[in-house]
Image 1 (cartoon, rainbow, N blue to C red):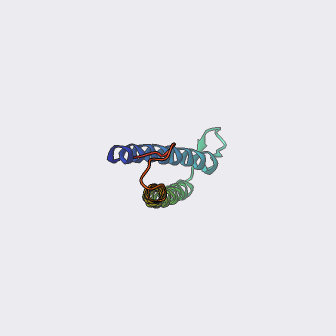
Image 2: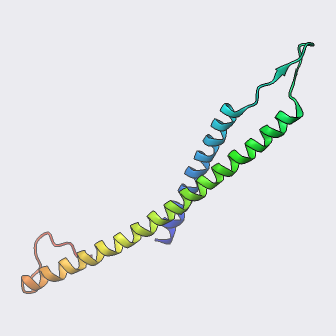
Amino acid sequence: MDRDSHSEDTLSTMVLENIKNKLIHAFRATGEPREHPQESGTTVRPVSISRSYQANEELRRAQIDGAITWLRSELLEMRSQDLQLAQTLLGLNTEIQRLRRESYGGVEVEGDDQQ
């Protein structure tokens, strides 16, 4: 089961990195600053707009990182709940098998899956 959890970790990390890259790309596309043309026909970005853009970009990255951290914690919680549920189901299956054996006097029942 350790190998399965490792592959789930790898898959989760890949999915989250893909989401992060898509979010960064989306924020770049919508958040790029407008350049102001000068009379000479070249475009120049004023220093204050450049700094503002950098601050906004850092803020966006921090928000994305926070969202990814939250997703990771949610995925870890879900994995924990999955393991608890699996243990409960295995315990219930064991109890059902025991009760079947008792009710039929120890005779094996057709279709009874022994694990």
